[in-house]
Image (cartoon, rainbow over all chains, first blue to last red):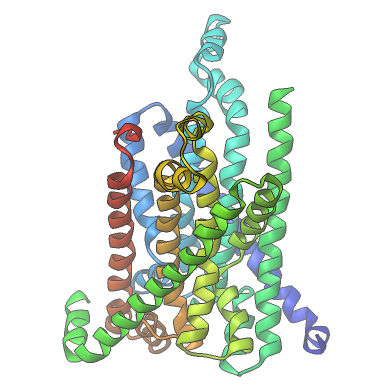
Length: 207
Length: 214
């Protein structure tokens, strides 16, 4: 606790880095998944292929993935961000595609009957109705990305993992505690925040 | 690069087989321990809906904790080595198994249970012959998730002296020795992918024939 009070600027900086890296990775992953998910939602064969590939990426252990990228992109933040994007694709694509697929067929029929074209149906019917599921996917992948960012400190990406690794290297428990507990608190808060959003969206859909 | 990794592997056979052995032992024991705790616990609370809700909520919070943070938190308390790593990995494996056990038990058709009770089955018989076989595929899905998570987590055990294939990766990164790094990263990825495929296949086999979708 004393260590934390004396070094709170370092901790705040690590937390800030952690959040920036996670948000960057999540934004890229979300944009990609939206494109792929929309394309694959109504094409079962494409969806199957995409799920197999992204499931493959998802199963590779985090540290191994970071290691594989070292010969290709070296150490640092871009390595970490690529790893996190690869990791988030499966969950995000699945939530986008499932969300769109679960829109009732008669709702789409009605929209078409009102003279909407495919683009209008996508933006004004399918995506808004898929939103609760998309947010659910975003919640799971946000937590995953925060977790990967902790490990990514080992390839010099920065963030809260830096405190943990420095603490382990210099046998400094206060640093380890601070880094690990701050990372846990961040993960739990983001999870609760997005869970709240998810509930509000679901409520709106029923109303 | 791959050839260099192969040469490194051939030059260090004993070191590699030890690391692989430790990795498998660490992952398998964490999975078994977590299953022995989570499955009975899940079954015990499944019928008490308030308790079950509390367990699911706790597990969902525990599930969000970063694996490396859990390992790091265990270190100042229990020190370094195999046992602290095993403890941390068991903690990591608990939430997916317990939530899936609860979901599996709750997915059992109440009519099937009613019919079994009507046929004069005892509570134990209902559990063993009706509920568990019907819940098993879902429980197994939890084991599959936990297994992959534990194998990934065991890579990070290298940071707290737990051994395993992560040792090659961390040493390889520290010295920027790409062949050494690949000798850890390739086998551990194959291990994770192989486990996922194996558990997936087992999951299909244990699904009661009437429940199979494809």
